[in-house]
Each structure stands twice: as structure tokens, then as C-alpha cells.
Length: 255
Ligand SMILES: [Zn+2]
Ligand SMILES: [Zn+2]
Image (tube, rainbow, N blue to C red; front, side):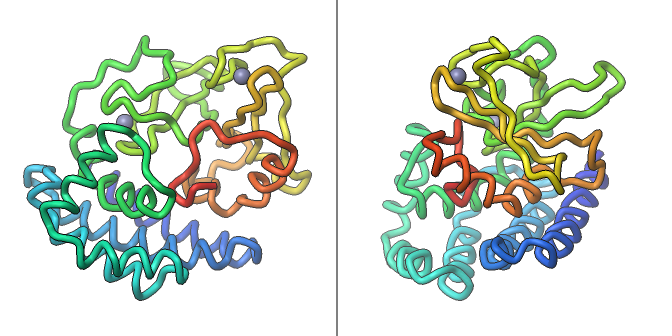
């Protein structure tokens, strides 16, 4: 299982490089995301056999801040610089605050999520999470919201829709046609948007509450890596947002 998770991370990087060559409009953000994924892979591997406690791994946060200064956009770099010179104690409190509130300013959120994800993913993998009959819109392990969803055939269910937690990556089944935000299930108020040349990535948008979530159909494209394909298709988000929809839970880049 662990070896499988590590291979998944290598494959995600391969997928990112492939998508970057196809999505000019997402090139800049994918370039930066590649650095984040490499950082996370290294951190995830370093946690093998160790206690996944982010408080004991604050040095990784400083490493990430350096990465943001070096490779981030100007605003990301400036904020990372500021955080680097924040007292360690206060920086830890800011991370704690984010975990409690489950929200932060977009750049802080990007930085904190990038830092915390490998720790929480390790913890969630070790934990016994009962998600079989969960069917809710908060993660059964950490309580954060799902940032995307995907459809796949599994042994248990054919064409099931899984929600993916933004923090710990836990996945759980959820009704395919139901709005994750307001629970609306009426077909005439749920719209699906996609680009003709990429039907594997769709937006499920609800006209009752105005929220949408991405739906990545692995049956249409089995090579997709949901969190990477999501970022490569940011044009869909911009399109929906121009039409007044808001994303149920933005991805790490706040899209
Ligand atoms: Zn979670
Ligand atoms: Zn809704």
C-alpha cells in the first residue's frame, strides 16, 4: 500500500509534465505546482516510519517558505519572506489557527496546505476511518471539505462518485447527482459544463446555491490524476466564476 502511494506521487509528477505541455494557460501555475509536489514527495517519504506530527517537522515549513521565495509569484514570494521572519512560536500558532478555522488568506492557505498535506495524508493512511456509510460533505477523518470529486468503477460500486478531502486526501462515496453544497438533487437545477475536447473533466454546478465542484471521470480518462488535472483545467474554473458560480472548496491555488 505504501509503495503504491509513493508510486502514485511519481505518476502525479509525470502527469503534471504531460499536462503542462498541453495547457499553455496553466503553465505558470503548473511550474510552481511541480515544485510543491516534489517538496511534498520528499516530505512524505521522510515521514516513513516516523510520527506524522507537523509540530515536530517545522523545519519543513521553512524549507517550503524558501521554495516559495524562489519559485512563487511575486506576492507568494513576498508573503513567504514575511512568514520566514515570523517567530517560530507565532508561525506554529498561525498553522494551528488555520487547522481550527479551516480557512486563511489565500496565500497562507496555499502555504499551510502544502506543508500540512503530507502529514495528514500519512495520518489518514494509518487511521481506521469508517467512510463506508459516510455520505457527508466533510471529511470523516479531519473535518476539512473536499476540493474535488471523481467518478470511477471500483470493486464495490460501478461509476461511484468519490469526494476527495483537500487536507488529508481521504476519499469517500457521495451521491453522484447531489449538490455537495446544498444537497439539491433536482436534475433541472444541476448543470454539467466541460470542454468538448476534454470530457473527462466536468463542472457540476448547482443553480439553487450557485456552487460548483469538479468531477473527473476516470472512466473517460483513466490516466487522469484528479488533483493535477484539476489545476491544469483552471480555464474551466475561470469560465464558471465569470458566470457567477463559486467553487465549493477551492483547490490549493485558491481557484
Ligand atoms: Zn481529511
Ligand atoms: Zn446547491
